[in-house]
Length: 440
Image (tube, rainbow, N blue to C red):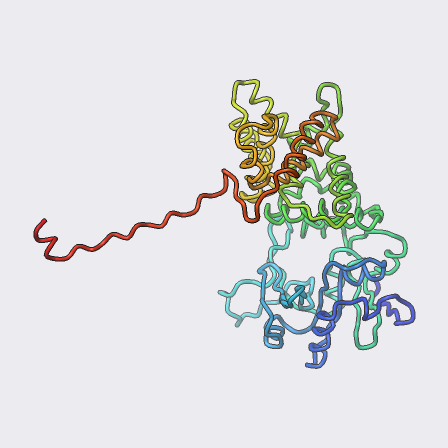
């Protein structure tokens, strides 16, 4: 990396203030007007340079989190591992981070030893806490990838490049900053992010970064399960899920995240490979391309649907009724994936979507309108339609239910027969008078 940054003047790049968030610009100008250094940084700068619309805007500054909070009434300080300031506006949240150093802080002899360390590393080398503040150069070089380490300076509208990110943007390369083994060890989630950025941007992963990713893929299990769940959603809900899925399999990350599911993918069922997973993710990519929202439970239902269906069928052959078989299949799946913590409410909705598939086959059955009012019915019907289109089975059944819903629309605010019952009001006990109490 260069000691002196590369400065790209306004005439040499495509970032314009009209392409940026007005709220982020307000933050930058207020910090500057109060004597602080502040830059736009990260994915927003990268995306604008690539002609893409940024999803969020991040600011890096020399102001401490406490100073940021004093300047902005809409500020909320969050995070322990990385202390951040979230500035809440009506339509977005602007994240403000203080410039950080990759070097651990020096502790003097007279400093109290009872305060928590601002920099903490595990025995394996994973960074557990990183709140040591530094310079813009130190902050840029401690970021994950070169294309995410570009600063935009509002004082002269220039781009500041400490890590060679502009060249890698031009070449279409995802390259980690520094030694790949050390950086992936510090934060294993960077491996998942490398896959996501490569797929999302259509870039190639630089050779040494790729090799370290393959070698260290099993260590992804050191990351916290809730954080990995959030990363899984980002992987598959940003429009390039099918490409991310293929990269996860190639690197070995999928086998580390979902070992039993990965083993199942490597086997054939009745002589046929499991191609439905890729088609499911391609379908989700199409939905996101149209701007449609996809819930986490619908994503997980499509992603693991065929795998769970085989589990349900196995329990059914052992004599277990349909709904208990679905419960047992879901419980077994959750027990196989401790690395990724799927929230309980999401897991319940996945189970509901799968259980409804059995009810569909009883068309019309008893009280079909009550069935269509159940929570999750719309996603369960969409699951049935996807499955029918992929397998060629039960298309007429799916069409029957779609016609039934059109002919019997639900009233506004209607609830189904499995909606949570309204809480009963407790009857207030009348207090007896003292005279009555004596008589009794």
